[in-house]
Image 1 (cartoon, helix red, strand yellow):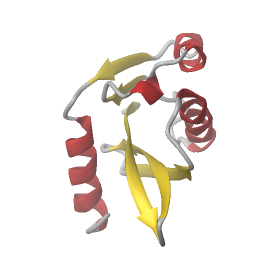
Image 2: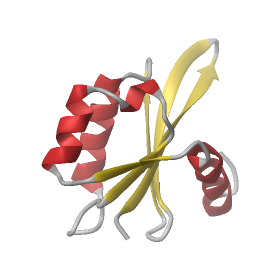
Image 3: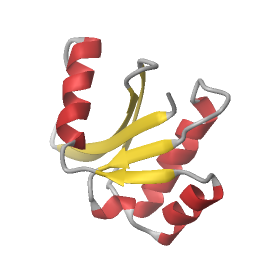
Image 4: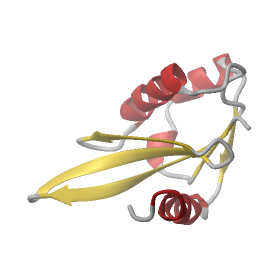
Length: 109
């Protein structure tokens, strides 16, 4: 536990584009999503802070897995990860696994 996968998806609703950040801890069956106008490192930091506030484990998040998207690389996010002593794992398959897990947990995206 404490293993969090994070990815973004693009959503269009009535012609308006938003980038939806998704976080998932498969073992805990914890899922959190939040939409922003665009995906960037500032919004990634904001999303991560929101997750920290509601994550159900007292011992917190230990590993964050993402793809290699530009929104995950910025000085602010790197500082948070170092401060919290978190490791970040990059994977090109995280998006596929995250979407599959959401489908399994909730029946649809």
